[in-house]
Image (cartoon, rainbow, N blue to C red; front, side, top):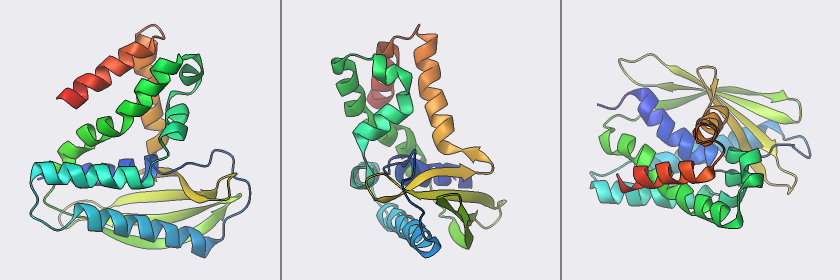
Length: 205
């Protein structure tokens, strides 16, 4: 049985990380708008990943479609790699953006394949946080400890309201994943090809 954190990570990686992210919000977001957005993305994830039974191939296809729906791949690529993105060649940047969605499907698809429980999302409220709004939720599965999840919703400079970050049990998902990617590049002496090779290996399974 997949743990609640396993199922949680699928939802967070697909919805939280791959949604366009506002690094510097342009204007304040209204609380009802923020809560509506989070409810919508959670419902979309449940509808897409739920139901069945589905074959492994079908589950992976559904997960890929969900990622593609919310993805802003070029923006996310730059966000995740930071300074290494700016140092990368055009060919390396193109390769990374092309591998990102398949990598996430390969990584989190394993959790979807094994999941036979679906946590309930309980909405606890939402509060302004500077120009953003923090939507507080809890993921509850029978027989397991609940997981506190905070969604930071902001308005991007483009005007689009987006999920800026998700914090599960006090851990920022975006910060963690960015650290994972950049640490691989650092260990490779700053060579992005090391990360690209690792991603290809994961995708090839």
